[in-house]
Length: 103
Ligand SMILES: [Zn+2]
Image (cartoon, rainbow, N blue to C red; front, side, top):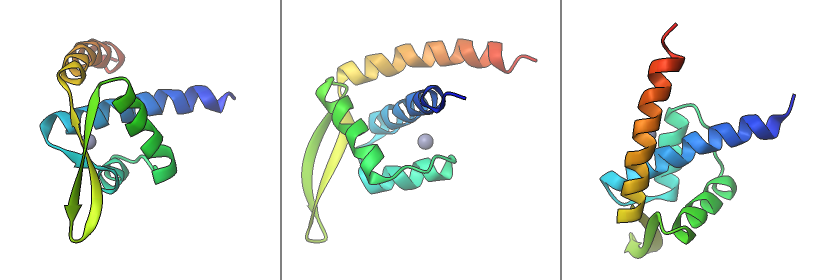
């Protein structure tokens, strides 16, 4: 079985999760790792951070450094482009869910 296809599929779900949360409030890496674990995705920082960076480079997320308890933390928030993308994804997810979960 081709594991890269399975991995790509779940990584797409992870990207949608990130966009969804980053559209609600600024999020940071470790917090998102916990959130994804709650949903059954075991992500290491080494896997998650490149996804954040890719979303930032594509202009879907913007990043801001903040000092929290003496530590530098990078917060990500959805840009207007990211929000538009999320809206589009939501429509497609809605259709997909109706069809896939129908039977
Ligand atoms: Zn979530």
